[in-house]
Length: 504
Image (cartoon, rainbow, N blue to C red):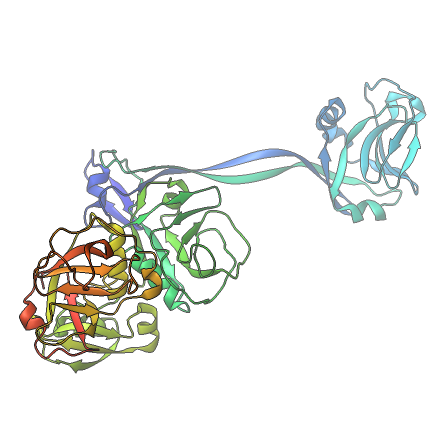
């Protein structure tokens, strides 16, 4: 059987499931997948009727009631009738026979009201009238209210005696209804003709490098969390500890992806389900070009595989040879600096943001010997502490980060690195250590003056932590796994130490 997967038609054996469809496609286990089964076109008749005359067409919207029901029955009989008389107050088309009972009650009529009247108070000469101004009168059919002209009122204003009704037809609206299922159940069986989207693809705005990079960083783990879901958008709150400049702004149209650039929640990513006006606090990230059904159906707490077009292009963490190949394949000219040997590790890439890189067309790769990138391990049971550390070092968005030496000289019991004093004000004290070991990584928490300062302990101690503070002022959240003596060889204040959690 034939099934379209992410826009490409594929052949599958009978009985195939979603598990077969996602194989080899962009997909992260546990994320949502959409299966489109069919598309139906639905035609529905509204309570509007288009009345074509020799002067043009106007639209009559029916009021509920017996007079409107009678109109629906009489449309063929009314078609072809002429304007028997036209005054400053009304235009009257007819006459034709009905069974309307005579009612001589006087009524109030407003401009563009449409109603029945009985000529000579006789149902054998029934007319359809359209009011042209406010007036009171008794037209023999009681209220006789059919409805009201809502469009094409200028036609009513120019009608003259002798003009005729050429046709009357109900206004028809046509809508497309897609029959689809959004699920994370890979046991769902497929049928011939199904269409499957395994991910949500976003085409990035190439004028907004910071906003685009933020989405690529959010999606680097293979998926985006749905933190919030409403009628007009779904949103991800995963990384709101960022600074994003105001970039290109657009109307927040359906399928538009936007990121907050100012105010509470900078970095919050929005995927719009309904159109909203332009906002100066929202940068345009891109537009969803695949997987719209997934975006529409995603609920809070669910996950979506997100891919971007173009893909993220980052050589950091690769060997110099691998990194240069990656960038050259993307059409980027490369200049090597630092250790330029093929097996050196790319520690820095300039520019680092993908959109800036592609727009510029060239990059500088800075390499260091493999033994100068040191492994660490982080305690994920302390997420707030690890989050701060990753933000300071860059490990939140790339595989190799760096620590800038704050203070060190040979023989010290610790080595300290620069942190962020402002962010450090929010670093709450953790459980005080009983013993700090050589190689422990920690920071000074808000209980002490130098909050945010990072450090590595060089000697075991029961009294002082990695930054020289006592237990109450220290949070320990990681370990240095590399060779500390090798790391400090030739080290001076202001120099960088490159770190990674990966085994390069």
